[in-house]
Image: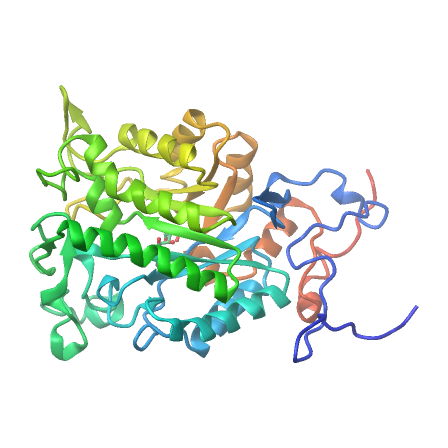
Length: 420
Ligand SMILES: Cc1cc2nc3c(=O)[nH]c(=O)nc-3n(C[C@H](O)[C@H](O)[C@H](O)COP(=O)(O)O)c2cc1C
């Protein structure tokens, strides 16, 4: 037996090898009797031949830290920090497929080949740490050219900009903001230009080109952003889409463009394909009155997701809101889980991810145990506690591998427990 600090093979620099991967359960129950029964959160998941070591996924989180769309060392540290702390997958933030599809001037982008190398570096680091990594491909639609969150206001609201619009002299493009219809998100948002058939085809093509760049960067999965009031959500919702052509009106018409993008991405990408949706607009009143759809909701979402399943989407990440400025969210622990549950019931063979105010390991485990979802995605809890997967293992009484360098902080979780 050789007593060397084994390196990750094939890397130019020295990284100690993690065996098993960080956040993966130890399978040797002789050493860890407490691992005889593995919680659902730590069961691996294989999609299209890609194995995710557990079911705790890092949700995409905009960092507003790019210049001209380029990933920087901030992204390497931020994503790298999550990739070393045990989530089964890390999804990089909303990444614009065209420059005018950025939410803010500082969004990440993938509209040129020169965006690939810094992304590839991050992917390579995540892989060296044994973590699967994906990217959320996005177009902000009518919510483009807006200010980065902290530029608009501070949390205390001691300073609030008088508009959300990023002007030309603030690196914005307020006169080149597109959407399905000429309806701004709110009075202090850009006025969108209704997309022509050519605009629609160009965006569809940009998604396909972005996929080719994702292949070069080496991503394991792609998530299409169809949530939070951005372009795809704008097309499906009757609140933001009042078109009278083949892309508006009936549900079939409103779904046409997003489904075409998803289909195009599916045919270009053989690895796992995820789609994030908003399951409801949370505007006042019902989703449907008589034969008329009044706002986007779970009934239409279910039809949308069934079509995605037919196209071959592997996972649907179920969020909500973002398309109606007066939305009333029933904020509380797991408040979006009922939507995930409804989709899971309608599409039992499709992998469904639940997201939104999931903070407690027992809460998260219960959603999987009861079949409401197959995967849990976390955002803010991982900002507060990037080690959440390891903490969850400790709380659920199971031993998982911690990055070699961090093990001394987790000796309680890593101590074998005697069989009772
Ligand atoms: C800083 C920050 C940035 C976010 N950026 C994105 C994003 O790029 N794409 C996206 O779909 N959702 C984004 N979200 C939403 C999260 O992915 C998540 O759905 C939401 O925060 C609810 O989950 P949580 O309660 O675990 O935070 C962001 C959230 C935060 C806090």
